[in-house]
Image 1 (cartoon, rainbow, N blue to C red):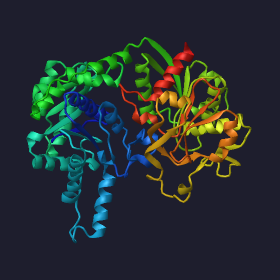
Image 2 (image 1 turned 180 degrees about the horizontal axis):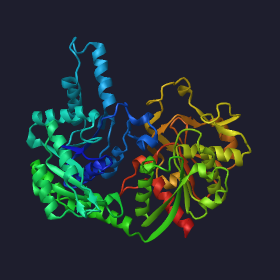
Image 3 (image 1 turned 135 degrees about the vertical axis):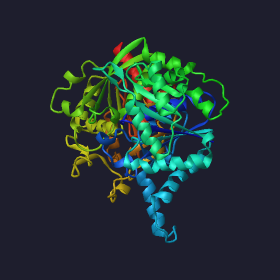
Image 4 (image 1 turned 30 degrees about the vertical axis):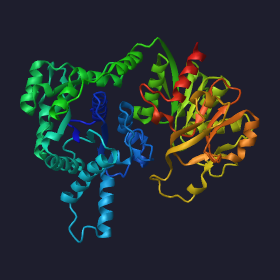
Length: 533
């Protein structure tokens, strides 16, 4: 096993996760089996209880783990199917250590950062190798070099490198090389300081990924190589891509990053064959058609809150040779206003998930607009619950239909809490999480879209459709197109007299990939194109 550790310096948000994922793409295309892992230094056990405004999207894995959004990049850019072992937080590490201490596992010893915390971190790397196997493990360290909470992870890497042998480890440091407009120069000093801090901890990077607005000329590269103690060929320029993040593997291949990594790790592999990836990128950059799709959500101000949804729309657009212009609409803005002035220019409407009452009435108005104007509609999680409430109110005449999440005393609770959730008081990991099977009804639009009768999708929610209203609503044209295998839970709904209206209780965006778009997204964009034309 070979190991690559990705660290970052100077500032946060440099794109370590994307860099790690893009490198994983290149190594996988060289025939290597890649394992991806993220270390997050924060003390939360996982991001499941964190606000999207704080952390962005919570990415749910097949085994139900609520993880960092970078794991979404890992799964989209590679063939990895990740588990909770692939995302480690300081909270998890300390929780494990404290449980061991309470059991007496340490036999009365003083529990310390070294060796107990660092040993636990190293153990997480080793257990991942045993569980998932592979040729190369790429581990991203969250945060910025010098952050106090990240020091145990960097110390663990220092020890780990000695234990497995330096020939089996590469430290890849992502750093900022800012352009000072007044001076007209790129400045290397921030990177020098960042790497000096890393060396104080005992780590010497082998490769520098330099985030920069301007090209790195030879003189700047030589300066970075000299003062940061890395070979010239290991100073890699990483400018913002022009059109799409999926250009990044091609950019890094052009900089011969994968060649450098394989040389350092003594890996004998053929060059990465990226023709399929290049064709996908070309369809994203130069599509034959374009259309506008509305995403009506409550976290619109934050790009990362719906990261997987936006990427899934890109995948589906490329599959239809169509560019997607996303109209991001805050659902609170629609509330109390005519939705027509917000939604008139779009070819389709997508309502994503979310929690809490804020902005819900705006989502209901958007859903009603899609139903009445016969626009393609895709509802995800809360977007399905919204569709159920809207139909019950405006078609079935249940004017006070609602979810008990928003009104505990609702007279018509068409969405309600699961029986096994009623006594839950803790928020963390208490929802219906992870992969669950769905049985699709024959003759439905859903069956046509999926081309299958049995599917498995990832969930993250507490509330469900109330089956007591099924008979009434189906009599009016509502269709429960997919259920749990025992028929007790509604997983997928559609409308009988609508050209394309589908809403699901799960999160299909977690299963979409660049050259394998999710069927619901692909079908939605296809329907938008048909409606637009």
